[in-house]
Image (cartoon, one colour):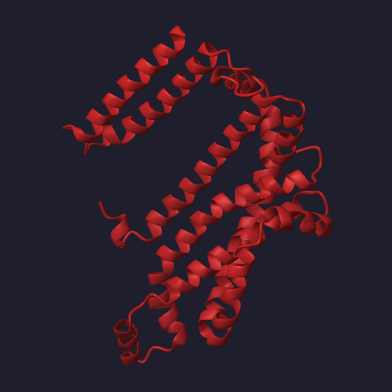
Length: 281
């Protein structure tokens, strides 16, 4: 019980410190922007550790962070091999194929209005399909290796990317298009010099959404069949063995990889759309 009280004290103290950093004289400084999330994250881990140990929570229900960290360190080769299989092969390949093909199709859809009217409703229908229904079918079609996981990712990221890109291509105003027309610019000149640059914030919004969907799709697809490798396979087998510390270690890998993937796309976005108001400080 002492550890639980200590956890409560630490939580209140960290809350007060973060409130001061967020609203005090350092609220607009770079120090506060870095310190607040670091303090919050460290507080969650410390409180988690103290509460689990103080209340004697069984490891099969919720292992403490120290045990998860130990399992992570002891199984680095296995975690790395799983990440290469799931992220490096399944998620990344599906992400590139799905987003790339969606971008090309969006330009074609924008050119021909009947495709926009016919394809986008199909996209809304496909986006509503549950992954647990699609994944087993694609695993049977493409086999148990990473190709089927890549196919699941393509299905998951294609339509969000398509919808965002089409919306971006249609975002220019009539005045801007009329101005290009007075310069005698054709469709492709207007597309390259006006509409594609204007669509970039929408395109990157779709790319950032797809980073999360790609990782989720690749992991979930492995639950329905995979070689003896992969993050989804490891989570499934570890749950069956009641090795929850290994499950949490895989979750940590997924969280780190997903954050890094999202951060990379956001960094590229900042360089490409530096002119957009959302990138100005």
